[in-house]
Length: 304
Image (cartoon, rainbow, N blue to C red; front, top):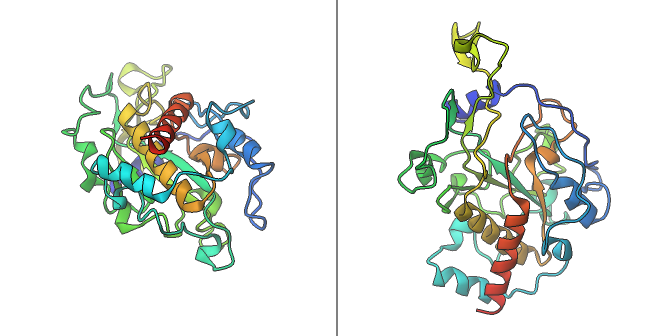
């Protein structure tokens, strides 16, 4: 793990308790029907990791898609990729290959079922008063694919300009873990059941207004004998760029085609809800917009 990412995780304040969606490691499923699971796992994530109640309904067209058969032919996906100059390696591997299986890819285990949406929470801008105006540009440092090529935290990283890279050469057929729910390391039951997609999203500090002005975003670290950022609770609004939303939609559609049924999307914070020191991502995710981009992409692939 890169030093600055580890620092970002360590500096995050303790997160609010949230109700778990009830994962059963023997059944390899959250509680309820696939649609009920998605409504719980896509709860809005507030700063600090607090979650809204489960959704009454998912935004269209997700409500009608979850866990149902995918009718998009592999050839249609490949045609779309060719028309847009996108390699299959950029979206998690060959669309004709299967996804990973649970229990560390055991032959009799179910295929990956959950599509977990993360944000990187980097870079940590701490005391910055605003987010960089160039952060959605290919020229911004944190949109360089090489920054994430060796990260161990996910299958794919999507930059704010809408490109993506397989981390450490992993494909969506590689069983991997990136949440607290999937641990401890010796418990392999859930490994391979979740697909992990990181999305570049910078964070700023939420100031402690009770502290003196010069220390509102700083605290003294005894071990380092130096000041560190108090937290990284604040993300930009909207959280993800439109280019990110479109690439995330493409990865979701292609992965679902590989599974044969629509994957259950999930937010990292909701997957780990109820576990101490759980994360608080993704911040400021516009679920309705992403659902609309998924629907638009499906329409384009089916009726080019």
